[in-house]
Image (cartoon, rainbow, N blue to C red; front, side, top):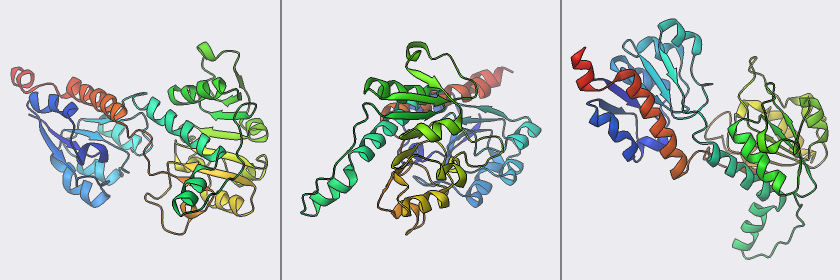
Length: 315
């Protein structure tokens, strides 16, 4: 029997049936505090006697990995690994598995929703009507816009496909420049600086760069088109948050719609509080369908490495 730590908030508040195969296989599940992202102190208390870890987006330090003396496999319920100290787990021989593309539909649909909400100023309108007013600000149509997509993996491709169907002109950045399949002829690959110069909407769907520096830094924010809409459902660090706040204050950016922040939840009175920021609480993959897919894949990955009680007894 293996002890398996479960830390994603979506799985600890209401453990889903997709975790049942781990119990059926004879393994013991260990949960962090329900519905909360564990901090380093809690992880240090939990990891010393675990063999497997179904991990979320919580930051994992070198100290946590060092304390996990029995850990054999980390199975992410998503595709990102920015929160995992890769050098340390490689040094320890710990396997990292990921649920690639499991939440692509949920994240892409949120990015689409944020783009539409920003174009039609829906938060402002909804708040005004709720408070007894009747605000009628002019919106913008996506048809005919130039939409920049940074990263055309599973998520970016879904986002680009919908934007193209709405009549947008799509420019994209991706170092790998993957085959676009049915999107061929509808997406133009360009350099990142050209995308910044041309795009009226920019949506990020990529990992952090190797140097861990923002892609949209002070210099590039200054070169954005006037009244650009920036959408970030990928990584908070891709955007220089201080520079973005300054650009919003100077009305050089029409709206920043983001599902991710450097500190979550963000401190009051900061970027999230700006009236032209549409802020969501890291809910991109938080749909019934995405959670089910990601958990199922993560569980399968754990079972492939940890086996069942019966298999382990036979060894």
